Length: 60
Image 1: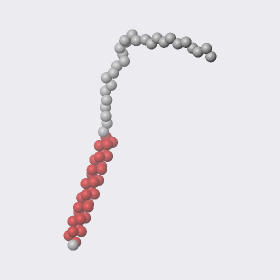
Image 2: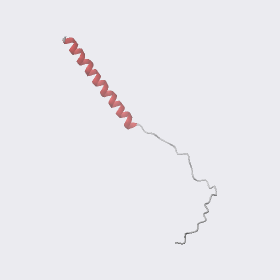
Image 3: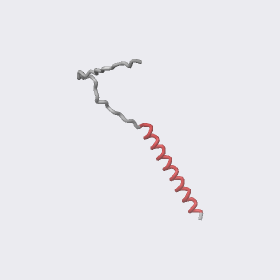
Image 4: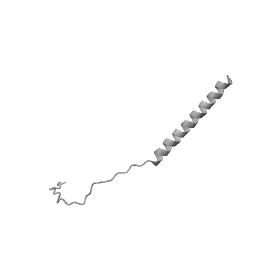
């Protein structure tokens, strides 16, 4: 009966250590990850577009 108790403690200890390693690794991966996006849109071209508006203000 004592050997079952020792075995259970070893399994529980190994499980706790494994869980702690997984949590630590996941946290490290979360905080060190980053996304990088390159903006390929440039607004330097002149297309000759103009806005013409005819507006009559109200009398009141």
